[in-house]
Length: 255
Image (cartoon, rainbow, N blue to C red; front, side, top):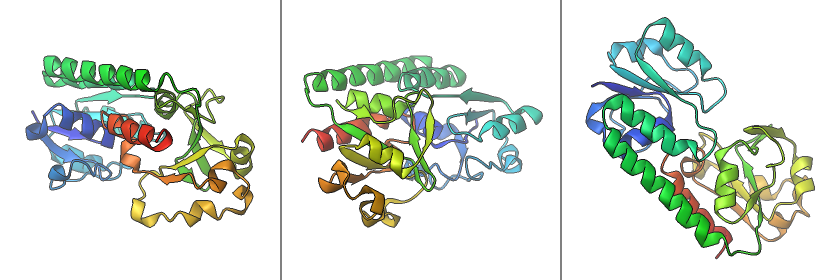
């Protein structure tokens, strides 16, 4: 089987399923695992080069709708009759379902079931570990700074916040993504600011880019020095790596 992944979270699911020998191409943003970086790249996940995909002669393309704008990739795959499946995760409970979907499509159902159960069991363990926390800090997650985009209730980061014994301050918005303003964030006065700018390397982000925002000088998180620059690959991708992100987050907000 020849598999092409056109979304980083899909690539990570394939890795956890141990299907590396079948993967022949990746989208440009699939920067993990490192040992797959020699594979041909087929363009950014929002602007996939379908000529490159087709040239790899895939038996299966793992597509996604996890980010707005990916719909045109699906249309192009359908137009060219390229065999594909579509994952569309929004909540954390969708991740084990996606693992099973990939397992069925590749003939590795038993392995996928084992991994999916491990994921679900570990989530339950982490939730249990934080269930006795009486203080549930308020978290502000920032996908993008200008304009501000932040996850709403229908996003796995609201689930991550809850499992970690905290709360996403924008979980009152019944959507996956919220276009917000600095004043809206200030009004909710988070205890922690979690910066996970999508597609931006951590080394390019400086704390003062957040701490020196003039509107936020009286914000609890700023005054307490609780501004966290986090690896977006552990939080912005609905894959099993979310477990690593959860463990780091719990240690961060419940030292």
